Image (cartoon, rainbow, N blue to C red; front, side, top):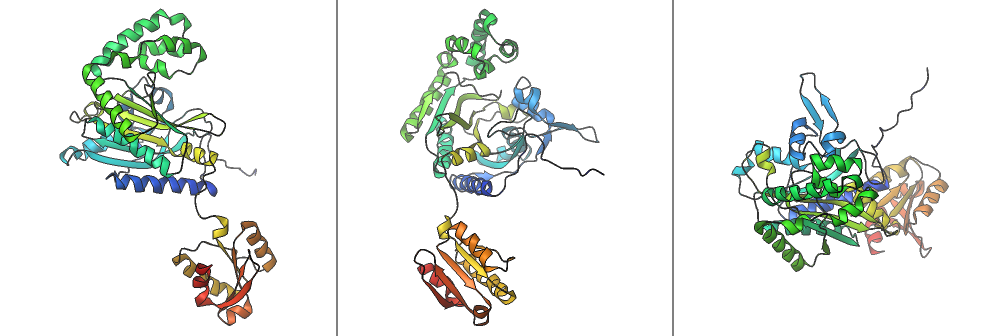
Length: 422
């Protein structure tokens, strides 16, 4: 019988070893900053009703048309692995009666999402996102605060060369009028458009601005922009948002072609980027206002704004900038031991070091001192603690300073204080 070799599915990935340090650093930073700004964590099901996303995200979006993982249950229900987080949060907001709580309701989430798209660097079919949602407040100061909170998370992770693109895509009134103007223009340039944009002209004309096909770029440059067609209310909202961003001194610029890819957005939209060492612009995520989504999904009309960011993308940026989380090698202590009694004493000492928050590396399963010392040398620890049979019997340990070469024998209950003194 041929042995089966199992591999992870295409577009999926393991988060292991060094990557877990980045992953956990991002999660802890998101949790800390979100908690500071008064956000409560929400965990929604990975599986939701397929119609929740078809209706919420829009049937003419890439997510609905070709990216959702769907299944039919034995009971005949149509479910989908969640491709994004906002629709699920809004469903919970309505179903849980959050509209009866003091407004606004501020929520954040962290978890896996699923989209069947072409895998590439930093983009997977199962990927992790964190998101922030504020429901129940229409003031533009909330738009600016969401942008600022995300900026705080990224800078707390020590990311540099961050840029922010912002735009307004108006509301129902001015956007519908603008769509007619845009469709008229696109039809006049139909012969110059790619096949996807010809289809978008009929189904979802704003998605034309997301097109990356080179043949459409010249058409895009000359296309009428929605920012020039905003109604008075949307214009005022956008102007105030920008004034708040100016007050925060955030590194933003207006991109009149930015529309975002989901149907539920209104008014403010934004995206964050970092510049890599190669000078390329890496998109980390974005968001915007979605004042109609709660009503669309069955609730009362509720203004809302949110953001979602790809954790793998942020990890990619952190690696590019060599932002290594966790204690440096020289701050770690290596513990070597020889013999059964020494192993027993080592287990107790490791707990003492842990309580003192002193990072320790060991090879308890090895007996040969030479093998252990080779590992200690590779790590580059400043201190090596050695417990042999003699030391174990005498409740002592040898502490060797690898920078000076000096070593001394100390009582086991004095090892922690000696290491702390350096």
